[in-house]
Length: 297
Image (cartoon, rainbow, N blue to C red):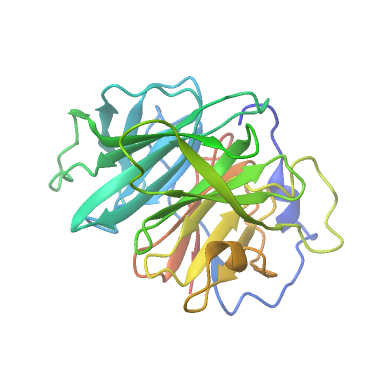
């Protein structure tokens, strides 16, 4: 999303709002930053399913169709070009395991003007990680591609996650009031264009007393914990956690009142990712801030 930048520093300068959620996940002072100069507008973040010490990052619209690999210290560990893919407006990135194989899902779902008749999800087998001291290089081909439409017309969407147990892709719209929750099958039929079905609505309104800056209550990134017990949505204000009980659908989960974590204080946070053990949450910003913010349980 290139249209607007929210300066989030004010949230940590006397205007942060205590929500009582700090006992769940606590924001720790950032100690690492993304070193790769090619990652200029990080719009998607995922923790590797092969090794939780690695992060995958993608750039926003207009950049090359590349997956960037970042080490646990923020170091540039290389990149992979996705063959046959186009970065129209990449807005999120997910990692998951499916039938014993590790995959990455790239969400080409950004649509500021809500005019795209069709959006695309690229599912790529996660590349093998480099050995110590080495850098990743090469290409990868999508294992499958999901082309889809929303059942109620075009939507801007920057928040996409995978429930690998249910075999579902969950999407949350931006710019609609309220944000709408949709779902798609992870492996739709081979022919035609899939349809994202509306399953509910959600809210990521900041606490009372926070100035109503533009887009501050809009979802800009999402992830689902590997065990399926939590969903996280990030906005320009902060991180919102939604707890999931057994047998609840994601429409029910995201309709609940979330737990609001301490503000992240980033300039334009657009990516959130759970660690595979569920003990931490990482966030990166699209512009103006190369830090990797972390919340620890």
